Amino acid sequence: MHNHSNDLHYLSVKEAADEILEHVSKVINVNTVYIAKKDNGHMNIIDAYNNSDHILDANIRMDYEQSFCQFVIESGEEVFTSNDLSLHYIKENADLPVDVSVRAFMGVKIYDRDGMEFGTLCVMDKEPRKFTEEEAYFLRSVGQIFSYIISLDQTQQRVDLLSVPIVPVTEGVVVLPLVGIVNEDRSNHLLETILQRIYQKNLDYFILDLSGMVSFDDLFTSHLSDIVKALELMGVTPILTGIRPDMAMSHLSQDPMYKGLRITRNLEQALKKVGFRLVREE
Image (tube, rainbow, N blue to C red; front, top):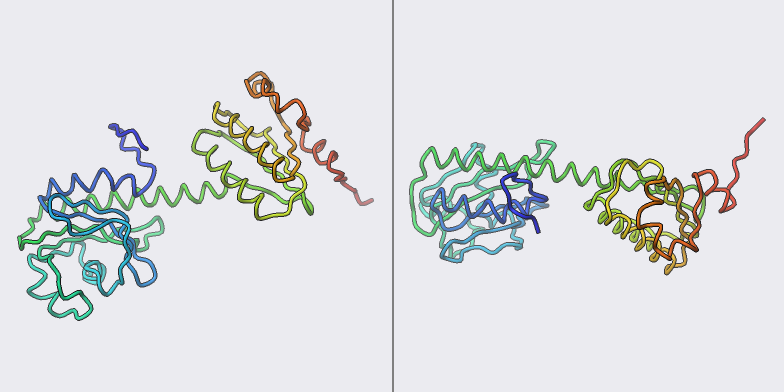
């Protein structure tokens, strides 16, 4: 769980929503605030905050035509507002539930890293009320913050996919060259991805090339032990290569598990150990 501090460093949209939605409720003085994602004709409620009256739950999925989000997305306005939905929008929309307790409603669209519509950020209340220009501007500003967080989140997901480049060499043999900084977040992702790949593929040898690493933390050495053990349990032979002096001097070298492990100086030697030979054409 994120340790809330002044740096506003959120690790996901959900984590940001947990903290921000309550603040929006207090500033605009509305009962319910929620953020929703549009997905194939549905609206998925990522998170919701209810102050006193319980109107909406998080983690629910509803048809697009049965959601108030449709008004926000189809209005064409930067901020959609309605002092009383029952006077116009609810009466003219046959797909909405008959028993609707929401009256005051305001929402803005939020976007992803490619500028495409991601979903909506909305506020609502059971009693009709008029929203001020300042409140509309505030909600639009918060929506822009969520768009920025979503862009960062999606960018990080793409980076994560590229940060574990498991390369097939030949049948039953893959190489994972680790490059750059391996911190706690990347160590967790690394472990999960490798285990998934082991399960999906019929492998004999898994070569981890550590020569391109700039730095690492203690958690990485712990996860490296877990990776080696998992590989061996699943019948795959792990081979480590490119271990630098600082790694050799760390507590990694003190783990008795590494005494029987295949370790080579470089990738070429590792490939030779598995019987791979480079044949040059004359």
